[in-house]
Length: 316
Image (cartoon, rainbow, N blue to C red; front, side):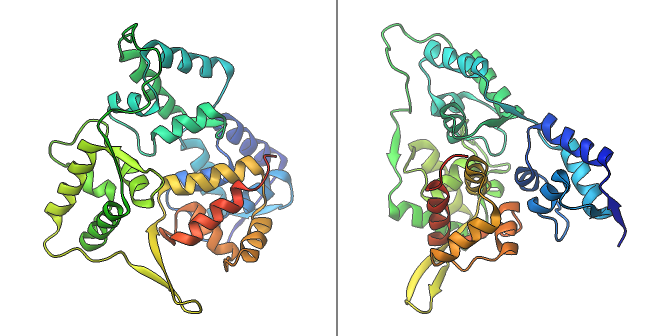
């Protein structure tokens, strides 16, 4: 296989693309399709810092094309944060409410995206996400002067109980229809519902939902189901005899990993050692495949443990 020498000029070009887009190596792999076999964030990073002097031509062409075409990310500056907060106080509408009014919503944009951006957990945000948020706020009227606090959620929210979550997972498993496909071309789709929101319900990260959205999704999935829904697929721990549900490894779940890795600066090798010490049999190729999206599911306990380990680390 032909290899490309990482000359100072090539290294400078890749470093420039990384800086201009605001997209790091891990995020580049997550947000770009058709990743070549064997390409990892660590390999790209080693080329940028001079630890690796060559790269396969297939890897080099993919990395260059991906960085030139990836959606740019914008850093949280005081001016951007001030602009959003001015709009929040003018309209008295919070993160959930503004996305209720936004349409169409880009894939991956949820109220958590905005909350984490404003809260400083994420230092950057996709440019198209920020554009949608700002346009949605600009279209909202001034709040009634009698309203003193920001409305954080509509009054029509209901709790997503464990029974509801299990039914959603069962319907997904029985129909073999994921949220993105479920909503594609769906009739009478409520404004504001998207696949990312449904994925948060499925994983249990979000404990409540707009009642109209929830009823719509349940009825839509039920209408696609011809037989009794199956139970969620289990992963069985043979040594302990415990049943550990397999859950979808969604884009937002991978983003949670990526955000924590970028926040802490932890190396993959260090993270793997920590996970192994926590009882998870993690291998380098398995971690990179999950971060890049090649692996689409994960045992629930493994996802939660990995996130807990990352959140326990200090910010770099």
